[in-house]
Length: 66
Image 1 (cartoon, rainbow, N blue to C red):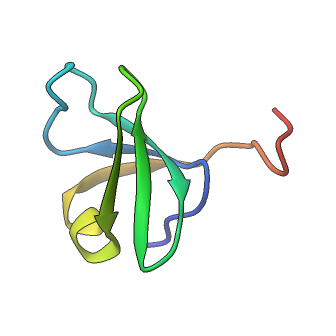
Image 2: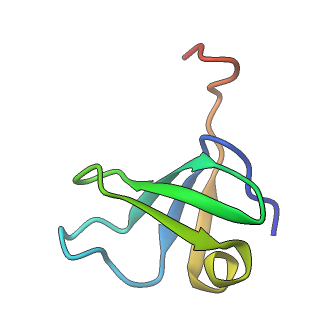
């Protein structure tokens, strides 16, 4: 599974705020993701993340441009 910076991930289970979408903020062995609904950030291993992702939506945002 190819996860890149600024991708929007749709998870299998919702966050307690009700949103299922998370934005990838940092990529590496561990990934930092941010909830689109409430802004909560979490650090998660790449293996666990790829297991819980339902869909990946690529964004056109490159180098800080929208």
